[in-house]
Length: 157
Image 1 (tube, rainbow, N blue to C red):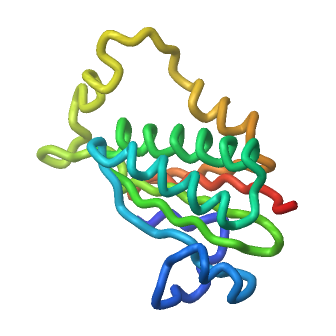
Image 2: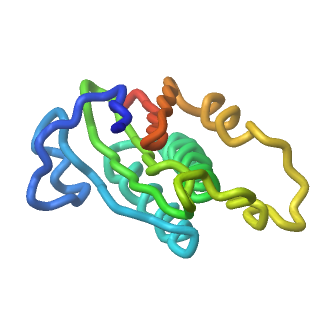
């Protein structure tokens, strides 16, 4: 089963750079797959694209924090990988993070698949979404057997 995104997907332009943002509403800024080993590069790309889209330094930091938390959740709960899509849409920067759901073994979700994700680091579950909700203008999360899609929205200007 596929999880329907809360935001419509416009056609994907040939290039995915911030310079393409001037092309108009629905412009794709960034789309890439990520895993545990690439979270740092995702964070750097998000910060650069948010700034290039016209976000102030403070708001670009908020975008980076929110997307980083969603990406970390996708890695932790989505079998170690996910997909990020950033686009300009209707006067806002819209960031979607998707995962395909937990890794499955013999038809069942892997038991303990995320046990080592935060080893040695004190944490409480749910803080990532809470933090994203605090810095974003909007947050939606849809989940199903095919995975989860989390979307954060940041007004431009």
